[in-house]
Every structure is written in structure tokens, then in C-alpha cells.
Image (cartoon, rainbow, N blue to C red; front, side, top):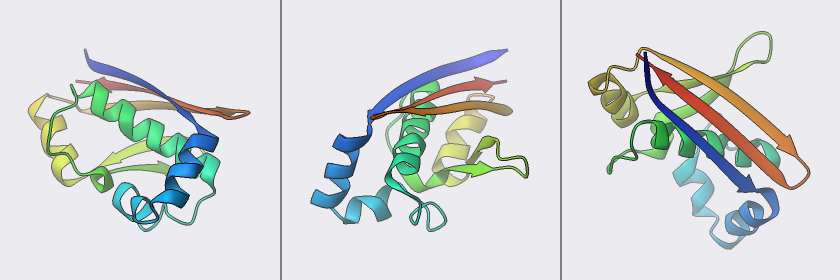
Length: 116
């Protein structure tokens, strides 16, 4: 059963400008493991985090660092949730996440399906 679907699009140059303008944003949005990544990868991960929030109904109080994009041994991206995001997902009955990331030119996109 599908609990929720979220899609987000991020303009890479705009996102890069925001990271330069507010350096603390990188630390607020991303886990220590994500922070060293290049801007395109960070933009895609931010899109994934936004898509996760949308799939959960965008509840207030979720911590951005409680949602992380991790890669498996084959290089496929997966959503890893902890803390506040895991609590909301559990309350909504989410048992599995499906994630697709893409970059093309100045656009990074993510689509998330939360499955119960």
C-alpha cells in the first residue's frame, strides 16, 4: 500500500547560491557524511529530503538531518530515516522507501514513494 508520494525539483545554481550565502545551511540540512559532496549531489539529496517530507504530508518539526540519502554497494540511492522523520514514518505506517534521483544540466530531481 502506498502511504505517500513526493517529488521535488531543485535548480543547482540557485541551491549553490544559497549554500554560499548561508554557509550554516550545509550543516543544518545535511548529515556529516553528506556535507563533503559536490553541489549537484547535495541538490539531489535536498530534493530527496523535500520529497520525503512531502510523502509524509510535510509535518512540522522534522529535522533535516534525520533523513539521509545513502548509496548501496551497487551505487543505488536509498532513504535512511532516523529520529523525527522515522517517528513520523512509523506513525503513518511506512515500512519501505523507494527513491529515484536524477541530475540533468542545472536541474536535480527526486521522487520518493513511501510504502506501508
